[in-house]
Length: 367
Ligand SMILES: C[S@@+](CC[C@H](N)C(=O)[O-])C[C@H]1O[C@@H](n2cnc3c(N)ncnc32)[C@H](O)[C@@H]1O
Image (cartoon, rainbow, N blue to C red; front, side):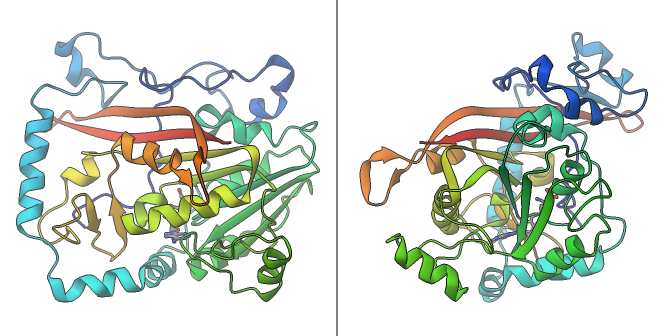
């Protein structure tokens, strides 16, 4: 496969361009302590922070954090993207990729069913808001993970959870992904028995729910029926939503509905946490020809396994979130609390190659 697999794990934490999240207070450190590996760095310390102060040291290590892109980076990236534009996916194949994307994710999870689980240590640093929901005294909390895949966010959270009133909903539109989550021995409760995980199929781009009860509920609440809800969730009830490398799997024309659905399930003041691919990330620059899905839509590609991937500019994510509500022109949906770019330089010391990973991270509060 020309590009990188769709399960990125790395995080460099606290890029200078990222607004640092609220520090976790001393009284709220018990669960955070559990996220540290034996002999790992203490809570509060920043790992993933190897800074390249002097260019001549670049080949001393395999990776550097919070790097600045070289001056000619953009020009080189544009040249590669010009190649992409000149050789898009054949027109006859485009509809097939767009009409049943879940099928390709089902295939992906069928093929990679085993050996999936990764204990994402970086969640504690990047998204302490998720960890805060799992504190013993956090009170009733609902966390919704959309596009949960094999559960690489929800299981690390559940296994360290101390909150008896934590409900985590792990949804994905791939039935196979949901099967993988449900087959995990920690489903629906980890050994300690605190909190509960619920998993179901949900397409975040769908307009109306297929579940009749939910439809009736929406009608009773006089809410627009052009929103859909995940199983077991009422509108306006979720405390935190995490969306990790999921928006990039959508077609740009689906973004608006996806964000409206997420807005609809969040409580006022609830948080939306997003991490995804940034424009000109190594995964984009490694793509060869015949993968750009449509010459009219730059930055949307098909991977070798048929799954879609988009590479975002910060402003694109921001614009989705601050769009006005359909029926209230004056009211924005979200206040953006953090909008950052996380850049990491990977070095192939043997071949003297330098490659840049670029991820975007957003935190937004429902207004
Ligand atoms: C790159 S994977 C990321 C999985 C997981 N969030 C993680 O970080 O490990 C993208 C996931 O989004 C899911 N997905 C894609 N489109 C979706 C949609 N419209 N609704 C819900 N899930 C979707 C895919 O099935 C896949 O599991």
